[in-house]
Length: 124
Image (tube, rainbow, N blue to C red; front, side, top):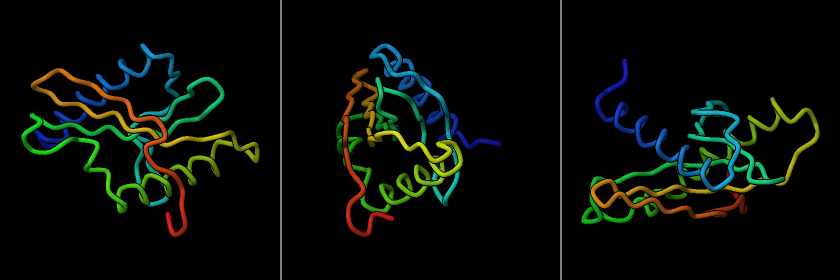
């Protein structure tokens, strides 16, 4: 059973999905788990497969939501993305990108950071 925090997070993820869809993303997976990590949303932005992390804060006074996607979280998302590609891509890996949707709830503000991080040395 989801905790109250998880329940709130699921709501923000659904709002982020609507935000992405309005910008032309075609979502193909939600809360995909594998490789020791999870990706909140996976979707196509044109010909690019995007692995999207959703972060939210109640207010801006506690820091910007995108700042919470640190190296450790990036590594988990990258590992999950690799597992997804191994399972789903069937040897035809597309171009990929790692995006972040940041939500400041009390301001109703959504920000999309495309190519927020990449797979660098030691990323996984």
